[in-house]
Amino acid sequence: MDGIISVLKPPGMTSHDVVAVLRRLLGVRAVGHTGTLDPGAAGALPVCVGKATRVAEFIAATGKAYRAEVTFGFTTDTLDGFGRVTSRQAVRATYEEALALIPALTGRVEQVPPMVSAVKYGGKKLYELARQGQEVERRPREALIEAIRPVAYNWKQEFPSILFDVFCSKGTYIRTLCADWGDKLGSGACMTYLLRTRSGSFSLDTAWTLEELTQAVQQGDWSFLLPADRGLEHLSALTVKEHRIRALLNGLSLAAPDYSGALPQAPGNWVRLYGPEGDFLALGLSDEQGQIRPKKVFGFETGAEERS
Image (cartoon, rainbow, N blue to C red; front, side, top):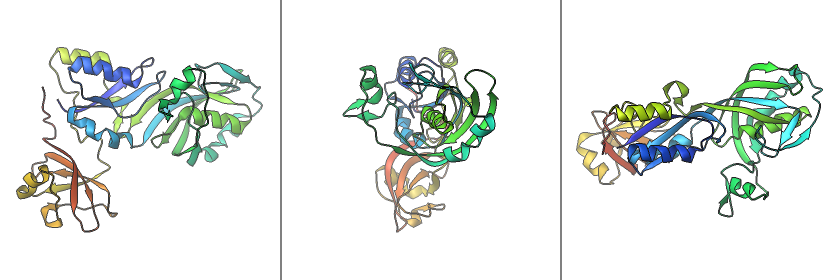
């Protein structure tokens, strides 16, 4: 069984919890998610099964989209609404002044990973240290916040809030974005709602709940299992000539006459390799001479994954 499942992760479960459920449901050990989503959050979580686990890193590296709520006037030790309140301050700024800060929050920014994140420190994840009451120094990490688009707001309550959509790169911490927004406004803030609406090319409208997946498996319906190359559309695609397919599957490099299609402009980039009939064969790396070195060989047909 090989492919990708677009899961709608419910709040209250970790991404690893979802993987554990699918392992039991599918009877397959090789299952892995493509990027941690906060336990308190819901949203799109692509999960790779079987041979498709080898493409998880490429899906994880794609852009994300979230709908989130920032609430101004108080902060917590977890930077979200579930933590212990660490400060309260009256919000004297206007909604318009809060919106005026958006340009300063977008573009390439540096974020300090929160202590409740899955970043590792000394072999342990930060959230494990946080549970032990520890706080360690963290190095800032670069993230790209492409756009912040307000959806709704409530500025008449004691703690004003803004519901917004954000489009960002892998590794962006929305709770840190909310905290930074509050710092710039001078009132403090934290994240009080989070929904991941898109992970790469996987969005909510194609996601299956765990209940729907369970029912589908019981009915022998495998339509939820997507091809292993779904979500890799951002990589260039090449077609391997028939007489070189066996060599490719045996790990031999391809020269320019062995394939058709446009290479990435810069060498050293990943490419998707297909057979003449559209079979997804491998992922490879290109070089300056136009050679393709296979690095991850699959060799099963797109849309017709093996099942066991």
